[in-house]
Length: 189
Image 1 (cartoon, rainbow, N blue to C red):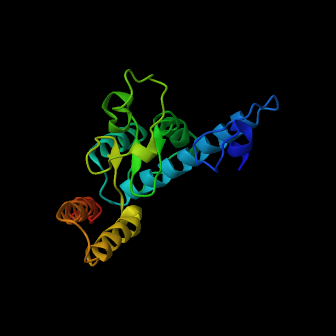
Image 2: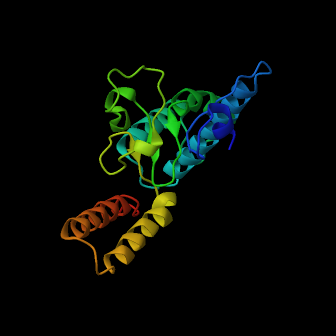
Image 3: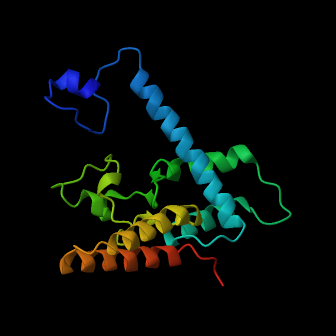
């Protein structure tokens, strides 16, 4: 509604971002809170890694590097502040999402493919994410319920009789893609 009033739209329009200005530093406060939440989420992923949860290769290599440098092995106590400090920098480019998380690297991000030259300080465009294809995508066990919901919704849509052949093909492809993503969340054997 604020966007409608601010930009004099005829209808309510949905858009991402903050449209105002703030001398009080509100925007910076929000960004700091988001960064802290990303760090906490990243720390949780590190603990899952230590517990043996299967991780995408980029996370595995980053977490293995931190574990080896800290000597964070069973029976060894690690300084929590040092762990937070070591994970704070990589966590700056980690963005939790619904179907996947993004361990963002602008040069390989498919969500930025529509932009001419991506600024290195750019953040991912989660609405344009292609989680099954992007090398930055991190599909983890906590994403399984959302992936299952997408699969169920696509199967439900397939029951509609008036769908064209192209629509059915697209839904079947989406189901296959989501099932491959779901397979990534299965425990390592």
